[in-house]
Length: 276
Image 1 (cartoon, one colour):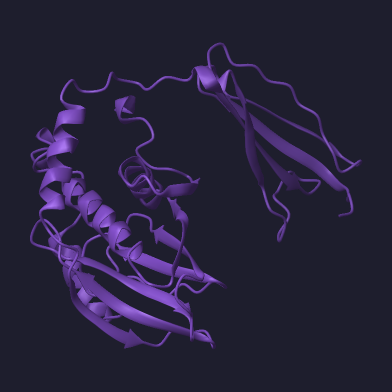
Image 2 (cartoon, rainbow, N blue to C red; image 1 turned 90 degrees about the vertical axis):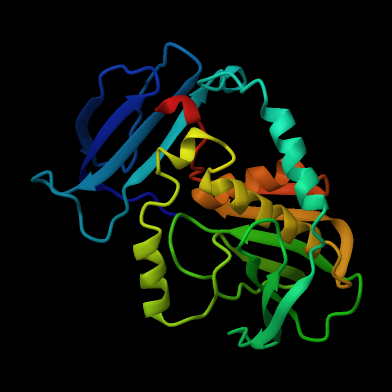
């Protein structure tokens, strides 16, 4: 909580409106600095500040500040208009999902990694060739109707998931791909080699029917539906958390699972598909 000094601060400001970046150095004697910025349209400015020594080199062990401020953020608009068939497409996807019961294909107890919790490696039936895959954790001896329902989704990658434990929480950590969890490294290396840069295939992305994320989203929605049928669920709504690709997954689940009551996103990916 103390303000401390340093020889100098190096700062840089960038903005969403494409203005040229501005930067400079100022004395860090007082441990604080004030900078001003503007943006010519609704959007954000970003400020980074690095504590430096007398020669302008970053000081070891000191974090760089990375933050910003928004102007007229409620007026932000998406980069491209919504496709005319967007709602019809998703109505059809949900119809397909409604026809597939979220049947438990396997549910194997695994090490929760935290005393006082129990964990299960779960696979559920879903639309498409891959199942819902994830790890469910809960406190040992949880009684019916006593736990908050929470799902978490992870950033872009090729690995499985591990247990996540939280007090009073029925926690489902979902695997983006429907593949196995807790496997040997060679298993995931092989998956990476066969799915290198998944989601970036221009041929796949020409149609929503063949887009990689179509089935990922449907698996996530199916997983949410199943989680809310667990007897331990307290009936008070679904909590979602994720970063990067996981944030994108959260938004899709929140859009189609009406029980969602809380959405925690960080560094969200695909926030503006018109960005090119």
